[in-house]
Image (cartoon, rainbow, N blue to C red; front, side, top):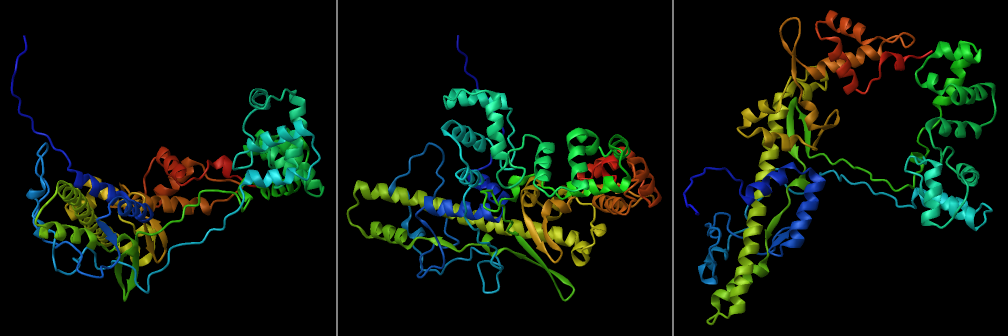
Length: 485
């Protein structure tokens, strides 16, 4: 038997407008421009640029659109006068909006060219190959990645040739054709491993004792070489320290990624466009928002004329009523989008301004040791917003400073206590750690234990495992791999 009962439930849900705002806040400048372009294409009621006539909605018109879920809207429910205004274009911009004559053009022209694989195939045209050999060579070239390597084993390539190209050959034949591919430019292309790549490059050079020793080391002692067991290398190859140093010097000149040296290869080039700019003017910090984040938007004049025509019409047909409903939806979307952009500008500016003031000592001097410990909650509490909002502002956004373009989230760091009990930023400790490692004796690099002792002597009592964590975050290898002869 079915039972009916009532249940009260309180829940929080974001409105579509709030969701749209959160998504816009998270976008960096270039992604925001793409989103704006998409909205302009999808909504004919929204236009960009300065309005030539009074073609905008009044900034303070009454709400009209939200009638509740499931309720039917008719054309008679819409107050046409709310859409027809003789006011000037409302202020949808911040103080630093739009392009101006002194704005820097943040774009770079890129030259187009043929792909890396096509570049290799063009070279194959100069080689005398029969039909099967050409097909195998073409398949091998197609297997080369952007770094210039063939990552797949030859037996797998042999199987693929049989199944996809109907070419049945032995592995030895593929090996011979591979030598032809490896003779192409740039040197080292078509290698199956790092040691093979380096050896291929060395064999293209003029023979010298240092070069022959380098080939011998890579061929017979590659594991000891990458682990920098120099004493074992000298003993195994019966060479002096100076001779070993000469061979290592030859190896260090090589390119471990030959495919990356091809200028015409098609790669995704990430061009950073700063979302903010900080300048020092007469000893004070000045923040500006990139003008590309503040577009000029207004409602289409044509849509206003359509509404005016409907209002003045004595007889209103069903098609006209349907048109008004469509216009209402587009006007709703245009208003929400314009409001969201305005709120985005305000949120970005307020948040970044608070970060700038919080780290004022750093932005005035550029000394990373003056970065204060700062977490998302510190900024959220000051601006009265949620931590997630601050996170969205800091995510994937950059600021142009007198000391270079910086990722905003890099200014956030946790706090640690020094010997005086003062809070210091982990960025400060990392900077000191980086300096200590840079000044170490390269023949006897400092271990993590010794680094921890040095930091403790300088007033930063941190454990060895913390030193190891910071070293890895800085991309610095262990002491053994930093050793030089």
